[in-house]
Length: 179
Image (spheres, rainbow, N blue to C red):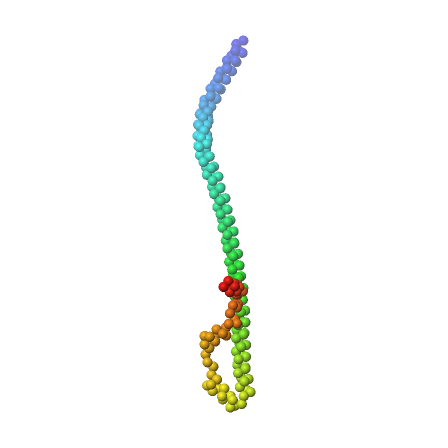
């Protein structure tokens, strides 16, 4: 009977030695685990303190960025409108320049035709005359005197109130009606 007791005692001794070996090796591991837990706790405390203000700052930054985006898009729209207005103004200026050019051509053509007519009629008159009559015309008694201010006003009276520019002529007509 001794033998089973011997094996039982030996087994208990081996279990005790094994448990001692496990405890000796587990104690440093448990200490490291405790240090890691304290570190994690400090990290979580830091996150709990610092994370909400950081998230709030990120949220506010997002709102400011969206406001700036709106401002930029408004600026782009405004610049687009200004560019369209400039285009319209340039088109209007081109049209007015074309009207002035057409009016200038018309006036020049009229002056040219009048000059040709004036020169042609004076030549025709002299062609029909006898040489003695031509001498009389070339004498000083038929010299053309310069126009006086009254003569100029009388000559320009039929053209008062007319303008090449439609807007200006409508203003002139409105100005005459108001008086």
